[in-house]
Length: 176
Image (cartoon, rainbow, N blue to C red; front, side, top):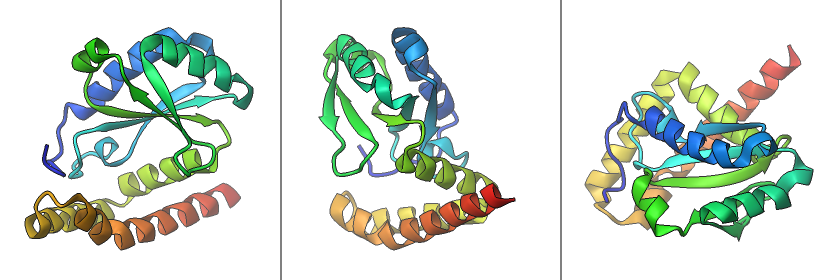
């Protein structure tokens, strides 16, 4: 799989397919599910993997973990990011029927969830930054091929800059 592909207008439908399956299992334990990351931004170059946040009340984590386990997801822990629990789909049959995705569970007041929301909102509101990041990603792939480490290192500074601007803009908007 290439590190990035051009925007695919099917990505929102991919998210909906995954969301609907998981929501059917989680029911009332899930407050909402959100599509985040570059596949959630129209026109963005991205790795064709859907990122989803399952938003819950903090006291329901063990219940949600069990229900996701029933579907075939294995809990991976927070992977070094507090208030964001990662899950990997190990049910091969289900994995073959769904688009590739990364699934996270976040309590509703999670700082990481707020960062995901701010990043997505910022890129939606500022397409010039989405274009700038897309151009950088294309350039890095052209320069480094499938060297994932070089690609990640090459885009790190711009992603951090966008994240800082996004969080600041979201904070400023919350004060008004």
